[in-house]
Image (cartoon, rainbow, N blue to C red; front, side, top):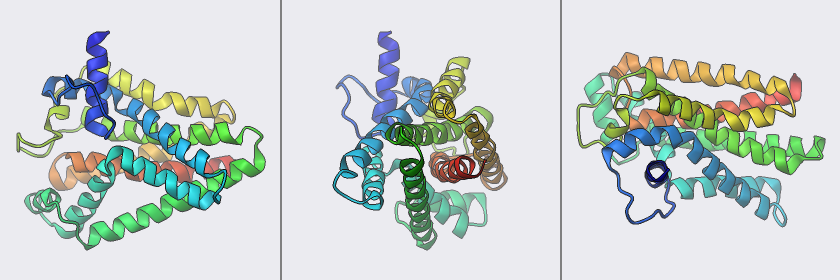
Amino acid sequence: MKKELHIFFTALMFYTRIPCPKNITHHPDYLNKATRYFPLIGWIVGSISFLAYFLFSFFLSVEIAVILAIIASILITGAFHEDGFADVCDGFGGGWTKEKILMIMKDSAIGAYGAIGLVLLFLLKFKLLSEAVLYYQTNYALSSFLIFLLFVSAHALSRLTAISIIFTHEYSRDDATSKSKPIAKSNTWKEIIGAFIFGLIPLLALSYFKYQILLVLIPVFLTRYFLARYFQKWIDGYTGDCLGATQQVCEVVYYLSLFLVWKFI
């Protein structure tokens, strides 16, 4: 139990800005095992994001509350995944060889592709979340609880799609100093089962209110499949930035799919 707590806090330290006990470090072995808790981190980030929305919605409009909820999720993770998304936009937008793509993604400066990608990503995320929240508030008595499950399931499932790539593909960089290199080691059944359990439970809870919601797994995992295939084609695997981009894109696809399923099916 003590070891599992250490692994969990390692995941919390690596993927968020939440303070952790002083004895927690980025030890490679613990980082590798921490992949099982990556979707669980989504529960925490989603809950904090929902709490921000819920509190601000009492005296601000839904749209502004949603924006502040998105800001809360960015602050709690330190824009970890958004940065990866921007780097992928720059790398794959401006590079035409594996070496060039990896070199661009390694650069800390953001380029035109990354800036444009982030603007469009946030616009989509804001609009889809606002539409979904307004729909729940209008049509369901348990709207607050459904919105809570919406936030948590989005963050958990999108993190599952991202981390699942390390179970099926190889890490692309040879640089041993890379921050994401330790999580790319061979994973056991504990990491795989743990990730899927924590990634799917919030969605299963949401499907209690409408079982057709499980259909969102199709577009979300199709998106994950094509992204992983695209990364494999160009850089022979994935990097930490690719995982961050996958999480962000699949989160948006989830919002879109969930809204369409809930409204039209």
